[in-house]
Image 1 (cartoon, rainbow, N blue to C red):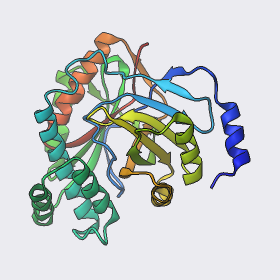
Image 2 (cartoon, helix red, strand yellow):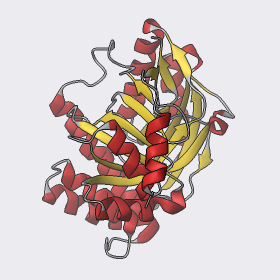
Image 3 (cartoon, rainbow, N blue to C red):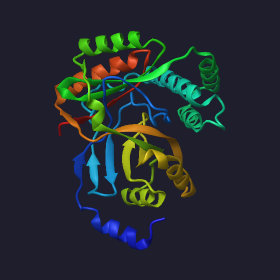
Image 4 (cartoon, one colour):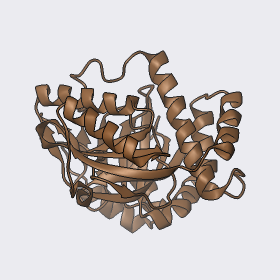
Length: 299
């Protein structure tokens, strides 16, 4: 727990004005994924992000996709895609740790997300049973570049890597992207605990991050455009940060691992529109679990 002196010092460092920043994740060519908890919030749903870093000036963000009207799509369609992706995440978790959520924390985290997003119980149970019976599949990452040189990290679950490789390459080439080796080096795997952000001030969010042992906290929105806080930490600290936040009375919505970009690609409106179209096409691919990017919209 942070002492009063530390919190007073933190408050004194907060700047009177906020500067524009953006935070999201992105991309490499192809490598087999290590075992890890699945992502917090579905990345095919895009939101604004405001990063409140404990070690630097407080920054205010904006929605990088705000001028791209089609990015969220019809709610029913987006909801169906979300449930399909959750099914893939369940399959990955069961493959790595078994179908008992009491013994598989990764699976427990994903099931929590499913319930929070009102995924039908029958659909969840069917996804678990399907995962138990599914033929062997492997996770892969494809590194790519998109419009404006943005970096994309495409996570895939497949039983035929050659098929997935050719399909991802085809979709990229057709939509202004290309496979590109080395992009993965611009990202860091971090643990992230997502929590409801309603009625929590910026100052309180920073205090909670300190008390819970998180390195950073981000203010963003969920797919329903409701306030969301993401507490960022080392992957090994994920469980402890989550537990600490729960003890502080914070409502946790999910916990898992994300790829956080260390550099960003700044895109103009035309490039942003093209990039959003490419990401949507990739997310529509049956083998794709999620797509990470390092996109930052021009102000």
